Image (cartoon, rainbow, N blue to C red):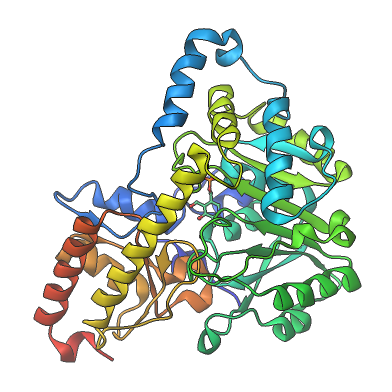
Amino acid sequence: MTMTIDSRSIYTSEETTGIAKRVAQITVSAIKQMPLLASKIDGCVSLGQGIPSFNTPDFIREAIIKDLQDNKAIGKYSMQPGVPELRAAIAADLARTKKIKNIDAEKEIFISCGGMEALAAGIATIVERDDEVILPSPTYASHIEQVLFAEGKPCFVPLIEEKGWQLDVDGIRQAITKKTKAIVICNPVNPTGTVFSESELRALAKLALDHDIFLVLDEAYDFLVYGDVPYFSLASMPELKEHILCTGSFSKRYCMTGWRVGFMYASERIISQVLKVHDAFAICAPTISQYAALAALRATNGSDGAGDKSIKELVLALEQRKNLVCARLDRLSDLFSYEKPVGGYYFFPRINTADSSIQFALKLLNDARVITIPGSAFGPSGEGHIRLSFGAAEPEINEAFDRIEKYWRNSSPSQTQK
Ligand SMILES: Cc1ncc(COP(=O)(O)O)c(C=O)c1O
């Protein structure tokens, strides 16, 4: 499946004279464009960008206040791969939460500027011009740009919507060619809220081993799975070690989106190469943020640390918001049909209108003053959907749905509905 820039972005800069093709062809994702457009309209409410309404927990902020007073190194570059204690703490956390054993934190983990930089640097490290990269789609919009920036070719294999957006392992098998370099797996999936099962992922692992393909894992929402659905990380399979680039983030788990700290776990061979890209683009992740992440992990042990409590509270609050959004979507069943998310904090409903997803999201923005993200931003099979985040607090969610309802009831069915 192919897609053009026009279908995945809301606006593009026409003037690209002198600009390298690899940059001219990419776009700022619609996830970021929509809030920018909305900043010019008074009084918008947001179901848009994935920012939780909660502040960074007090125990992290307090630790940093103290660190600012006591830690003379906090305003300096850290070691280029990151603060050693933080890398060790991440290794211990991965062993506890994902059963990834025997990590050599010094050689197999580096700290990045958010999970985003780890993904971009990782993809740039392994993908060469014209290499094909399989993206089960819909998927996180930035993966598309990261592959294009590396001059690779995104090959979209649709998730199976009728089966709760399951992975189409046969479809992926058929999409593999001699040029296939990697598969990027976002799990839980932003935007669909799918959590892939262990058996689907093991089938994918077999493909990766059989065809010698890298698996780039985006596990930014690994902690956020509802109910007792098990979470399985491909990074826990020792036999995949030379095929895995596993990225993680502190942004969502600890409400630290603005601190910009994430990480990559991979074999020493891969990390040593990715570090060249990290050095060229960032030198190191912000040192102060690394100490904040360290404070977060030191208080998280799987039982009753301040970090554990904050994660539990976050998951509980988001689960309530998820239920609220279900109830609000059900009242609009002539407009939306949807799968309940199992992880993450997004709904990805199908929209019953004749508009494209970009047209519809722009109408909601301009006419209802509600920010949403058009589904086409997430790959071709995202068309016909919009992404609704439930990171916002309940009053904002309710206000947004009140406005959507009003807009929908007032709009002429003959004009808008299919
Ligand atoms: C699936 C996914 N991956 C990666 C990121 C980037 O996260 P970070 O803030 O760690 O760079 C996001 C942010 O929304 C995301 O949703």
